[in-house]
Image (tube, rainbow, N blue to C red; front, side, top):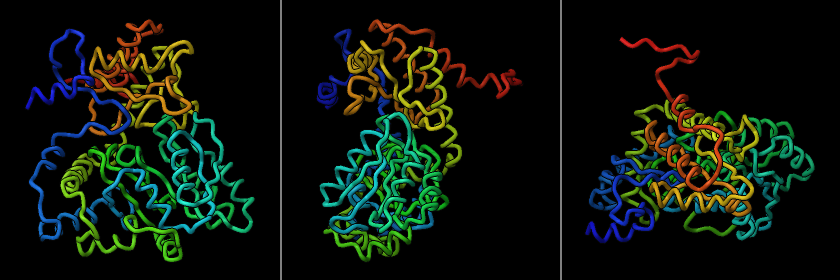
Length: 416
């Protein structure tokens, strides 16, 4: 069995010496992220009866406690789906054929979401963006102000654009929407920010939150989420887009009954239970602080190398991932391939218009300082080995950033 597994994963590992791969593969893409041993162990349990009392107890507990992860008092619906399914669910439950939806273009995934809307029979309108910053609250407000008949039914924004490493200021966008007096719903994609960056939908006036299991929640792909506020539930009662699998109404009774309208992803639910427990044990504020600390270390490393961050807006740089621009004559894909082959480290690729122009370092999910330093070391060695000039040591810059030997003012900490 071990031989079969090793052969099947040979393309992922380092085989420059011709021998078997040793050690752990570093999965440093911006999702799916590393799945912790606790979650893997939880998911390895035998499958149980999803109509029996054990699963009913499990699902009731999850659906109650996951609201704390989303930081909402409102229902969180769990679908056996990818994040794309959660996108679709958010739209089909609140819209009718031909409805206009306003979508902020912040990168590859916001563009994909608009294409989903178009295929569903909606009329998406993109607020243009430069793919180097988050959504512009003033531009969204200006667009809504022109819609005097209130035909736009929803404003859709990606909180953390995984393709660019830029996040959008959700609270500022909510205030901009409110200033126009427009009644459109506010829908936010948190697929790469939930469980890794501060996000407060109730405080920020978000009507629907979209999420997935495979990033900050540390699970494999396979679960999609909609956290649904009262305004969205009211609109859903009037929406006429066809829906079946993604119908909220069929799912809303689950918190009380523990029953799903179809077969749930039972073993992923075991893992979700463990993920919720792990995040709450660490504490969400501590989780967010850890991600910010790791992001700062990576940004310091990039600066030391003399490379440029794709996100040009300092106040909108993501704490979940960092997208790094390559020198004009160099291939990001060639660098990534070399780092994978030599050091068994997977980095994220550039997507659509960013193809071969950037590489992305994921630093979200189950990550500690040494894993981060190992990743930065692999990137630095890869840059040097592929002939890309670096100004200084990113490893040293990251180590200095992460070091516990200096306090916030740079003074040595006392060691007893």
